Image 1 (cartoon, rainbow, N blue to C red):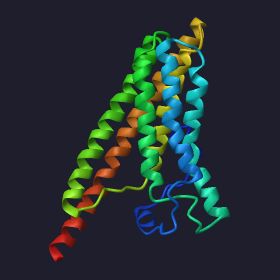
Image 2 (cartoon, helix red, strand yellow; image 1 turned 60 degrees about the horizontal axis):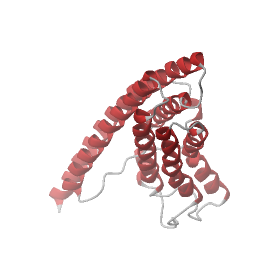
Image 3 (cartoon, rainbow, N blue to C red; image 1 turned 45 degrees about the horizontal axis):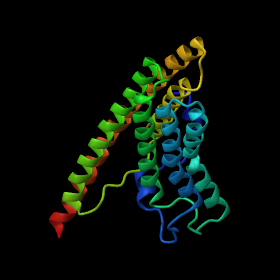
Length: 230
């Protein structure tokens, strides 16, 4: 268990995830606005990185903080149950796309950033590599499931997956912070921290990805069974 586990919440079982009532979901919620802002803020920070301008870290830190939108959604559900302004069916996939987009945007910029040192670039390379592998796997497994069931593959977020994303965002943030300081000792320390969190997040992310395999296999077997009964 990593340092971010105590802050991870809102993890549902497959049964809870499958039987949630989303008939009153609103098309756009307050949590959705936070989600949408994440890649936008990351793009602004990325432009500063590429130009070698200081001040990119605060923007990316705000972008990373929007990943707490799940807590906002659950709070709204608690205060306004059944109104459809809290957790929604589309919220989880939007969050996944926003996370990946923000990391890819900031990652590509960091690799080109003139003020980010080699350690920061190496850390971001690990994050981009794992995110790329995860994206390719997700597309492949979704295509498999869709061919069998005719539906899009939808999975509940896992605690390990959420923790891995928190670590990758922390690693990316530390890499971005290198851009904003000229202190040699601080730049070195930030680089070491970025490598630690990027490596831990990539390893934990791979573990989380592999944990989904038995669940997907079971879902595909059930879909095939139902298709054979039709």
